[in-house]
Image 1 (cartoon, rainbow, N blue to C red):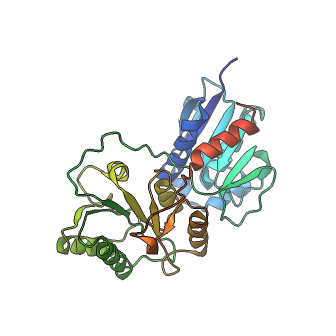
Image 2: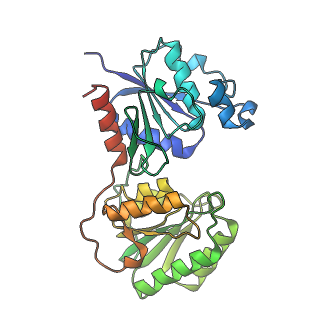
Length: 319
């Protein structure tokens, strides 16, 4: 039997790419990456392209799609939705179209075979819309766990601003001091920020690190010249603490088989993010920040990528 071929539409958004790669890992299909590059028309509001089902906001992809035909087209994010449907039409609607994240303004939603959307999006599940808890991720922990740090190793992942919700210096300072007090000067605290972390918060973290020797490493993706130690730190940590302002960041942590504590509140998290974090904690995929220092019982691993891939294979009879 001829093996199915998937086309994966990848744009410049790291989160979108990681979700697709995470699912491809578990689909076990031959696949081809179609790189989507946006042109200057991409500054137009995204709903414009979706309402009119137009794709002149991307650079030509004809050279990438000339030599094969897909059985499955996998896309993620609002901007790639119309591109996916245009390719399906090009091949007489024969490829299955699987889309991640709900494309709000697209009037052709039923043209997709499956749309996967997070559980806490305000979308009703039906025969072609499937809701799931967490965000698909492509986390691969490193095998080499050698390090010079004192156990227990706690890895703190700090997010940042999200729309009108702001993660303040005071919020981060209070969180870090509480962690240090819980550790009682025993062990190691490793910290990484995100691309959304403000310069003010970054400076505050640096100041705290100078004051407390238990903080052995601080990495800032945007400004650090050092090698990114994110995956290594996820691998060597005994426990992970993550701020609840990013579903993808929290989901990645919950894929590691490590105890995850989520620090979140209404001051810097949206109602949707709070609902998401509450669900993870209720289902034992994560634990409240306030339980730091206590034993984590009944820990479960999220495995969203694997669950989504399995659903696709069953739905399309690819098993």
